[in-house]
Image: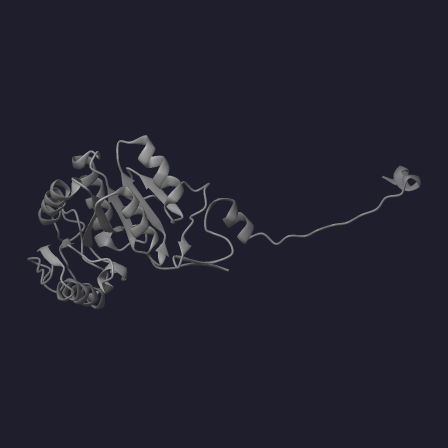
Length: 246
């Protein structure tokens, strides 16, 4: 059996991170493909003093992203896949607001000139999302990034590991010590260090954990080869006196 499940991919932003680089990469991860890919970042956890600067930068990145028909020159993000998806994403944004989250960048009700019938949702930021809220646990699968804040990297890793999914988790830092700790302690199959979409090379397994994967073997790498291999075992005996018959 081999089946990929859902995801709620977190990224941790430490105070020592390169904020401009982190913002660009996180924005591309969260809003690329309109957020409709299994490794899209959907939850950013700021640690300590990183909160104010990252929040300001990511809100600017979200509000300035050019949305429209994907084949038009200069467009950075297209529509979500259909009207039903648009309606679901907008309903979940409303749920987040109802649960107490701020909406400093609101992408609902988007209309693009010439494509008024399109299923467009602009990049959206939900701020001050609470860990116990439904919006913190639900996979939105759209261009929505939720923001949380904790005081320490220990709290951040605990928050990452408390979720039911384990597809991807990323960390932005300039500290090798923090990177090593996160690498070993984060409960996710795909780990990114200063990476927004931690997609492994084809010769490594695509390794979701917990409710992000159901089965015996992962996609890609030797797991994929094993998955499509029917094994045969041959047991033989050749007494010494028969050896000349070869």
